Image 1 (cartoon, helix red, strand yellow):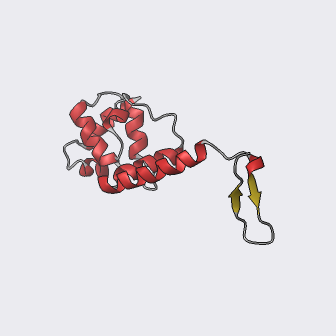
Image 2 (cartoon, rainbow, N blue to C red):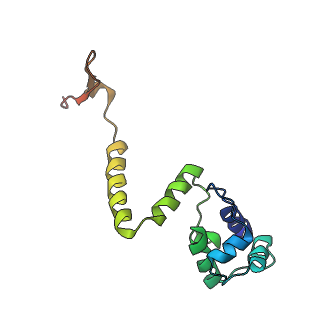
Image 3 (cartoon, rainbow, N blue to C red):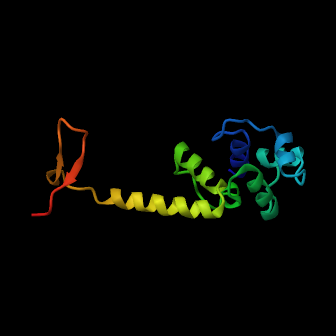
Length: 133
């Protein structure tokens, strides 16, 4: 499982670029050789916590996910892409987007009942909410 996750991340399953073993080694500042990474992918060796951290920084995935400690398998491709993009943002921007998304999610948790929504036809569509009876 660990090797598969590393290989999927390296080959760009969720990205546009298929990274080679040599390219990944260079992204780790050659702290991990292409041969060693290949051994991880084939299941011959398992990366330790330090190696997983080095790989996670180079691949944009969490070390916990690469090691199989954290599960992200239930996320679809779009959710994973969003998560990786969010992780790439500076912390200040992450917090700003987190608050915006949280507010949007709250708005959709409790939908307005259909009998309380009116539309104005013939004009640009506008939804208004009638007061509760």
